[in-house]
Image 1 (spheres, rainbow, N blue to C red):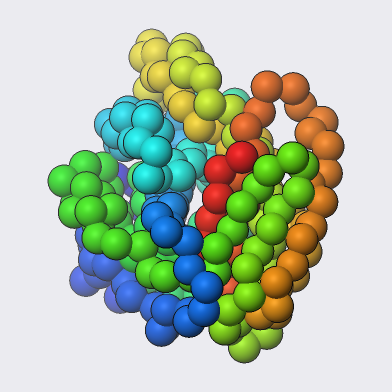
Image 2 (image 1 turned 45 degrees about the vertical axis):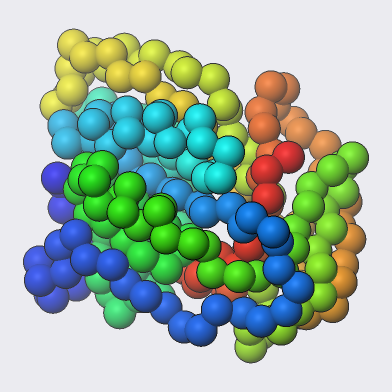
Length: 235
């Protein structure tokens, strides 16, 4: 595991799960999606097993498994082909919101509430076996996002549109710590953008047209930057 910027108490929280806040109350989805976000880098020698585990999770209909490439290991000799400073900031936002638990690669976040440092497939499996917290029903269909009414957190929640590539893309890494390896990537996040704000009332929001063909769409209803994910939907 490669360590990024972290708080002084990070080592004591290695592999720990951070639980945040009460679950929202209101209209709920029959089977809420569990959101698994993996922050990884092609330049990190510890990341391929975590990415391969995420590739397996991508097949599960009850999960939304997303792979975010981060930029802070690009200097080691290989520039991650899918990384974005925006995704690096998203990982840091989770740390800042969760008592400066720290950032590292690989690192999973489950529903924006629990974190796993390292490539522990067993720990991730344990966390995703737990029911997702109840939240408002969310549906994305026909170019429109529909969110049911419910009890919103203070300040409401952002409606985030995530576009990701569902294909298995083998990445031939030619330099750095993984030089000479080919690592398959799935559910690669290419875009995250806010398309609205939810304050507890039933709401419909149009989905902007995609600018990159072939990507799938998902919606995250998230309680602010680095906050818990209240609900999610796949397109």
